[in-house]
Image (tube, rainbow, N blue to C red; front, side, top):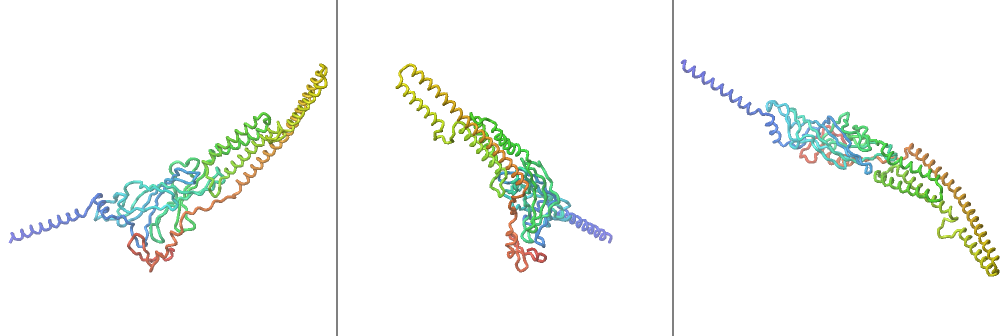
Amino acid sequence: MFTCKGTEMVFRHRISLSFLILSNLIVLADSCDSRCLANSIIAKKLISAPHSDNCSVDVNITSMQYETMTFDTKNMQMSSRVKVNMKWNDPGLAWNTNTSNATAIVLPVDKIWTPSLILDNAIDITVQPYKSDVLVLRNGNVDHAVILFVSVSCEINLFTYPFVFGDCPVAINGWNQGSCGFILSYPDNITMSGSEQSGEWLTENAKITHDSVIQNRTYLSVTLSINPFSAVVTLILPSALIMLADLVSFALPVQGGERNNLKVTLVLSFTMFLVILNDHLSSGASCSPLLHYHFCFCLVSLVLSMVTSIVLTRLTSDDSILPCKCSKIIKTQNANLGQYEADAGLIATKTSTVQASEVASLQKIVNFLENMDQKEQVANSNVGFVDRLDKICFCFFLFLDIIYIIIVVIVTKTDICKPKPLVIFDKEDYTSHKEDYNYNNYYWIVGYPEYFNNTVHGNDY
């Protein structure tokens, strides 16, 4: 009797021990470390976007760092570097404590779905993950960062160059059509990183701006300005000094050609600055920079001043500006010489004595002196006339420069040139396909084989 009871107790004890060992084995089999958990999630191939009841994924941009790398003034293109830190929830990546005790795991960035940011106005874009891995928490929250190298076209008014400031948009958005896609939540402040100056351009500010035409469209508005010191020293100041030197050159005498040499040098020097301006600034925009018109006026004024000086130099030695026409002085001189020769021949034929010969010689000397005196009188008369014309020309160019300065000041103070607004978003992408997404109160997502019930999005279009 006692033996049977003892055997039964031993049997029951063994059965309990077996159940305990089996339960521990089951727990150990279900438990998984971080690497095991990561491999099991990678094996699911969750590379498609998480699907929610409202056909959208909320992506929170926790922070943005902006840096202007280069700005091409001639082509009006800006290159930027933007770092975007994002967080979102993917229920397919979540796990419970029964699966693993790990609170977070690290997954390769190319093994799960990550949001693809869209830049509507980008000319060139390169997207690089900030790190090759992403951090995934137990509840399915994902922390990820990307770096965007973006080139965009800007429409900044350069009419008052180099005293210019304006905004350049960088339209960073998520993909969506109506109510489907992923919705971005932007931070309140944008962090400026790197140097604030890119060449002659300064980055004043960067902020998130909502588009006033298309709903749910936002862009990064970058405020830029130009440091005018470089342009003033290399373009505006030399042009002003050359124009001043042209006015001062009227103090040089017209005779001799020294003034003409100086004016030709000024024209050639100014042409060099004009080439520099054309290589630096674009002239094909809707509002061409006023500096182009300034250089055009200066070049025309310098050429006119040079031509005027050459004409005045010609008038000092002749009473005609035409080189092919004989002047009155030359004609008179030739006529007098012919008359003297005729008189001398007549005297020689009539008288052959020594006294007649002396008289003829004296007559020639007297006539030669009279001719020299007449020529000097004509030259003095031309010089006086040219001096009066020179003073008139100086007053004319001085008055022209003063009027030009007044006009430039008035034009720069008046907002007479406004560029056309830059179109950032294409309305057809958000309005033309309304019928394609609204059919029997269902929405069809391109690239996904599921239908989503339209319950709360009746007014999205």
